[in-house]
Length: 476
Image (cartoon, rainbow, N blue to C red):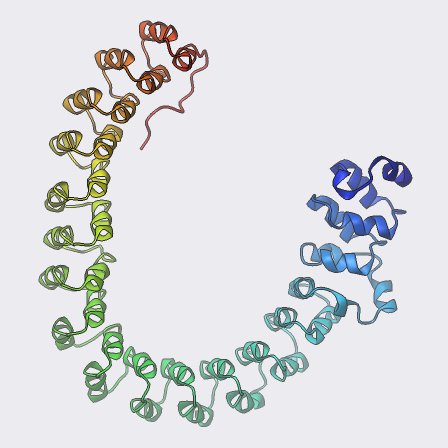
């Protein structure tokens, strides 16, 4: 059978899936043919090849990334390991990593991955929850800093390795040590004086940071360290005040990110000359309406943008943001839910038609406002009004008579059109308008017959369709 299939199909791409599966599952399919099938487009074929006992090691290596279970279940794997003790050393790193990442990966796979030269293969082992002390020690002594970093964060790291990793040449490894809950104070003392500010900043994050070390970090020259310290809840009052009045705006802004801050800080932050500090204030919860209103009128764009993240702005503040010079801020406001009428009225007169276009499809606009937009000087705004589900009566009458054919085409799709309006649009000079009318499910039969005789063949064909779907029905 294999010979017959080979005679019929010359290359992998020419194999049908059925024929390829036959080859991949036949016991006598030779290694050369299986190597060819290992690159077959069909995943089922490749999975079968991964489990075939005649598949050669190079092909298994290619398949291990996508089909690790099938490769490990290959019945010839035991013999291959005996013949090639370092079998996985020649596998691609992604394949070895996939094998090692399996929940039930055997010990020999884990040990081979640990000895592999690639970072991804070793890290696949380092991420496993249970390894045993010997393997964890191997990870901690790896030449790869990424692996030592992973080891430094493990719960099962032998305690005697902490001092060594806390003095590691790579600062990422020392950062991982700094966040461990079981770091003795003596090791922490060394990390507080670490040469890299990111390590010291990690120490400043610790929930259980001893008070003496906190006071030591308060004299750190790096603003990143002080910023991390400023977010803490357990600072002594003098230190808290010192950080809030720091010369570095980054530190002052970070102080406002603490869960609870003194009321006086809010007053100071509002008057801060740096907009980043005022933006940090604008993000704080539980600000009173008067303060939010003042921040909405802030001259700094970043402060106003920070307010967009809130859902508790008073109506007057939203209206102020509607006056922002930045188009995207006004667009954001125009598309917000529960937009107060005060803000809608401001945006109705916006000089940017894109803002008015967004307004036109709001469900809470009201008939009076929608009629104004149906008469807008910009055709895109009028077209958006024609797409509004709220359009009725005078609005639709205005849009059906619009000078722009694109607006009338949109109006022709509206579900609330009267029979009189449909009749008007069915005789429109623009073929696109008539086409949209012809596509309607609810078209009176007389109009359908009229449009089936339309001089434009596409319109006539559309009107004559027997099966009518809902693809042209207006939806929000």
